[in-house]
Length: 107
Image 1 (tube, one colour):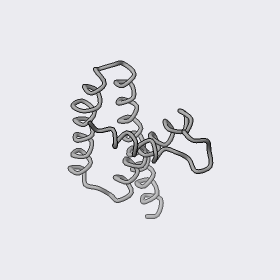
Image 2: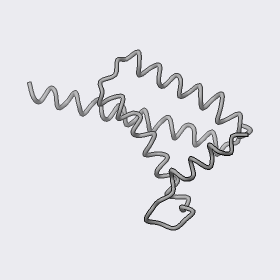
Image 3: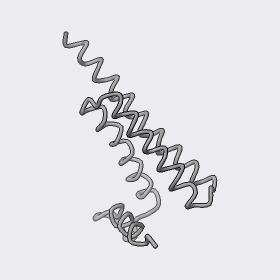
Image 4: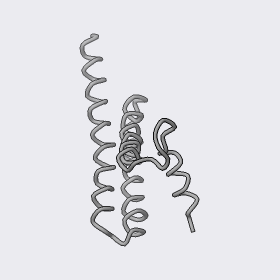
């Protein structure tokens, strides 16, 4: 039903410099970089706490109600969902901490 989404995602992960189709490590790395950028964007644009919570609640709901059930609740998909959320949250925490440290050092 949603084969076009999978095709589009595969094309986004395809490297112009590498072989086609892209190797698995490249697809995984680009996917995790996207999740890291979600956390960094929230921190760098100084999103309010309510917006940050809303984004992560929506993200958790997407993983719990979309990705995991659509894959039949398999352990690799659950592990991938946890890794996605952890990458985004960890990057948000690191970026926020570094920005606060920089702001403190400047005053």
